[in-house]
Length: 300
Image 1: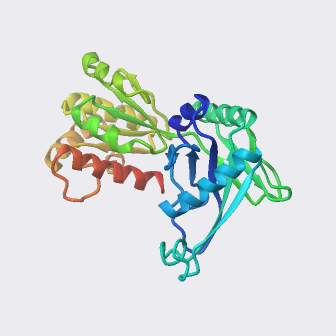
Image 2: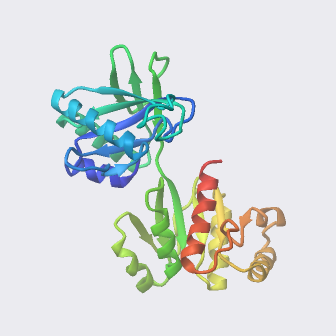
Image 3: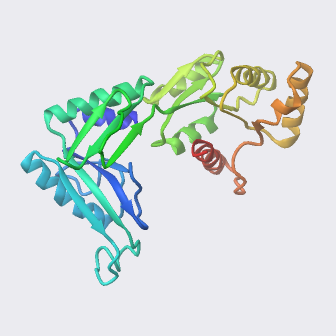
């Protein structure tokens, strides 16, 4: 879940939330995949739970749920290859249970409150119970339960991008939609101010916030400033540190850090040159490579 979903729901957009709660075999969406649907839109306003043919089935369930004001559970079965829509059309060969919740006033308020809590750095638990079918949002971890599934919604990881550069703009665009709270940091205020157009991006000076759960991407291209940022990230014990650099410049920066007393073993934890090796050349491609490495780190 992201700030974008909270903003849509709190602003009154969307008529229902659809969530995959259970899956058997192969299926496009996994438990926890969500989408926000509106009756007057052919596509989800936010998120995705499957292919276009599944969307159409879920949209029909959204209409029923909104009209009745009650939870609707839809089973998507793609095991029958003779089924043009769900078998032959998708070739998935699995079963998914999709729970469709109409966003009545009370439900909308609960989701808005829950998402505000997540944005504030606190987790929530969404409990899906079969008998009777209901969805409960908890602010504390539920104990023993007969729920069909319990989904823990964790706050997004913080990503600090040190260096308000044009490449940072590309990285932010590629990362849009991921569960990351992005903060752009730079000592050059006029460059930081240029990022005001990104509503979901926090801005700060060179003394960026960080802790052991923070991801830090250092890319200011000013060597001494990059060294200082790396020292700060290392001292905080950040979860991941990446340095945009050639191998030669990386070795030089590492030598400066070593002179400052940073152990070799700690230097080896810094990912540089940053980004998966996909043969990227220009800024747009480099941003994709960096985003791919960040997803890899998030999924560890």
